[in-house]
Length: 428
Image (cartoon, rainbow, N blue to C red; front, top):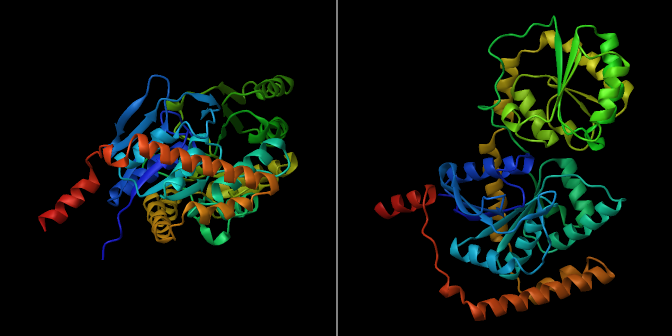
């Protein structure tokens, strides 16, 4: 018996031509879902002169809606102004599941809110970890609590991320699935020639900011260079901590052993992401041994023979680098690549996401009065505010239905794998 085919709207402020972990995740997941026979449409904001409807690989349709990014690629929060466009796309494409990505994304939160108001099934994927104490995290956690108060299913990319999301939002753990990231092993392959261990090159590609560990590099690099004369560093990336790294290089006279590339164009970097866990997968797929700090979901990503973990302290990082150098002679890049091929696959991620969609579609359909009590649990004042927002959103939907009935919105014909599948059924 064939699995039910879904019509999915992926929504996020983060998509190509911007590069990052979320962008890659949405793209590869969409491509694999298309291969499985589902219909997938992406909705994101406009990028410079890229606006309107575009088609990418395998007929993946992308709506670049005419909003410009306001801060860090996010659109300005409007709550209700996005409703007409979201409603039109959902009806035109006959969407059955709306899938939002990333807690940072304003467009994601608003689209999920509008979809729930219209009675559609919604799924949310959380790609990041957040704290609980600083002002930014407190604000973001309250927004997430609002979005997930009335969600059908949620996805997290690691068990640590799942625990973090459940604690931040108060969502029932039974509604949260763990579906890991993956890597395109065809793009990330080892060098065909076995590299010599006479010179060891340690590559760092990252934004040079505090949260990426740039301050650790300032203390670790001089000590590693002192202990291992054949080690050389290549650092790609830019940021406020670049000045500290250049000062360190001058202070210890390491100009010939520490190469600073500055901002590297994405076309010159094999990795397309800045998401730490995906970058680790890409490095392992290339047959490279990785040294990383033991934070967040990183310990879950790779087996011990592919990664050396350390506490985020300079002395422990130096110990980890020493251990990794000792392990290098026993590393076989081709074997590591084949192992990654078995461990992480976007096809597997798509099949696991299918199960989440099935569960979402099977969940009970509730009306506004049934859903409002769920928002009241979000806080004494916040709960009442969230209820007011949802009531206004419902009234706006009624107004839109009056001004432009759903029956008057033209549905677009299907093209690509889903239509081919439907045509083959008709032939039978």
